[in-house]
Length: 403
Image 1 (tube, rainbow, N blue to C red):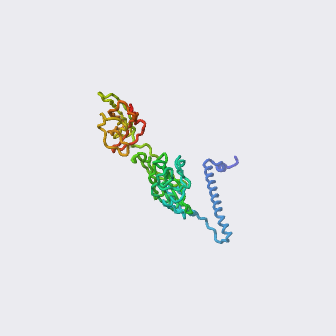
Image 2: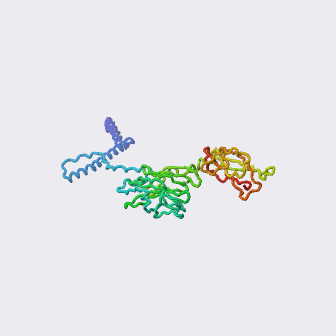
Image 3: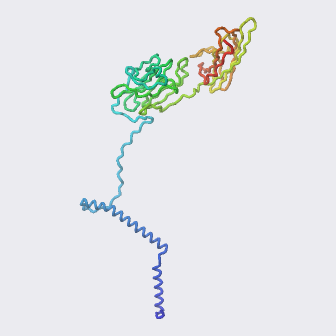
């Protein structure tokens, strides 16, 4: 290198350094730049392939059709939605019927005379009624009668309306079977088949342990059946005002009637209370030649609730001659629809007790008809109406001597 001109040597050294710096491996910045460049190139290639895939079928189709027009790029269009059918008509609330407006549905309007003139099958009666004679198979119904254990039509108007949603009316009737002073009852729906024959559609509801009487039935404009029921049958000296009434709604579900509205039970009667009777007594001889004796009875009446008893009525205590005590305070007015009490007196508020005293002159020796009888206390309201007790067993005590 000594033979070279110093200026030339300097220039060769600068050239070498410049070449070495250019061929050195890439650094981190260069690597990232290269990777971004490769990604752009790859994306461009994919896009080109996609264009080819889109355009190629167009070109091929044009060739098959001998289409001389040059292909145009595909346009992006919104797909045409398929035609939609009208939404189904919603089933009315509470209506389980799946058929509405059935063509040529038979007319189920049936008169009382028509139903009495044909034989029908009835839904089952409560347990024991069929064994007693209340028939259910091929029954020729009787008009309202006093006969017992005979299936009959109750003395209620028929109801007509579309209860199954077929576009034609059906008939609702109350059928009964008497077993004494009272009757078992059921509300039955009747219809006609395609031949015009009367058929039994089904039972709406019947009397059972939940309620004891059916008073009326009515078809609503919506096709439901509203039934007025009572918790007791006013008979056997039970007054009508003791009965509680409810309206319960039933609807056909395609197979049977189900309750859809109204109460399902009566529960405890809020008008009643629990009276409890206790007694002490004293029996003494009457001074002088009188052979009779004086009986003093002190009754303690406790009202265990839950309601006040405005009045109390004592039954069975008059077994001799009145001789004092609370006899003078007895209300002389007779009670309606009840055995007349021996005495009606102001009552006992809920949670309190009252004492009532009655003095009687009785024979010294009991007569042949004398017996040990019971004394009873009963709750009465301000209208002089008597009411049952929530616990009847503690309303009565026995006479201390035969009377």
